[in-house]
Image (cartoon, rainbow, N blue to C red; front, top):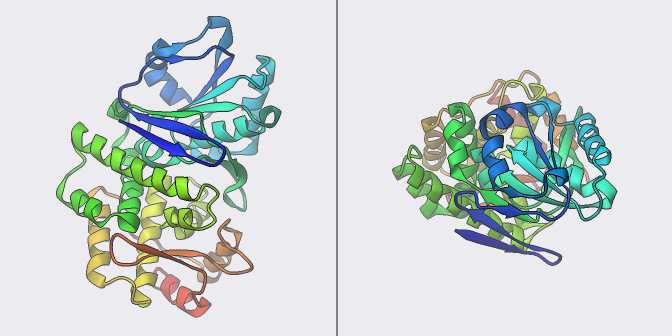
Length: 346
């Protein structure tokens, strides 16, 4: 399957299939980590058609804690040493961390060069690799330094998931559930009725998720409106990640916790019923995605909202489900109500 994204300044294909040959006539750097390199680099290299002298690999540490400007410097240094120019290309070969950093490095190297996404985790295949969000974390929060920089192409090969640890697979399912809750009631019901324990169902879920993400991004590339809905679960989840130093929870796990928190707020506003919230929680629990979290300091947690990119003019932007299959973006929630929700996790 091929899904196309057409934007004002770019257009590219997302190819969901076995990896095909990729012909590159210029210098190319593959950015990966030791885990993916050991498992899949040989397979990738068989499909990269480039002159040997034009192809190199930079391996960076594995993990969210390395998603920093320091690691970006390492990628850029490799590019300079190998004399990449404005016609060169980077390939992101790994999960969401690799994709975000490779995209950001390509956005700022000589003011911008091409990059290709070849995601190897479920989370990156259904979400992170599509849409051009790139960046790194710092002590103030997640992805606060970055750029919108669209890839030249995205190649999604679900066979990479055969070596994915169960926990990381489940973290990707959280992002699939997120999109279904916000945009597609029929897809949510399908997820309730079909387990993602076989390749056919996984491919179906990937395709539906990518089609949804592509539709949203095509309408709102820079997150001025509709695209913000894709942050359902993230407003709370990013703080959970930050409070635990990006070490306790995978991104998708924190998003799952954030969805449960957002659901409680939606219930208090009359947007979501208790039964609908329970259906969402049960689907998350089916894949062992965490749904509980203990907030040690409610006031500190609340203040973290204002470091989020989505906060504007001292107002917090919340993405809340309206039933299952629709959502609402609002920055008109009172502090007292948000604190009331947070206290239920305290």
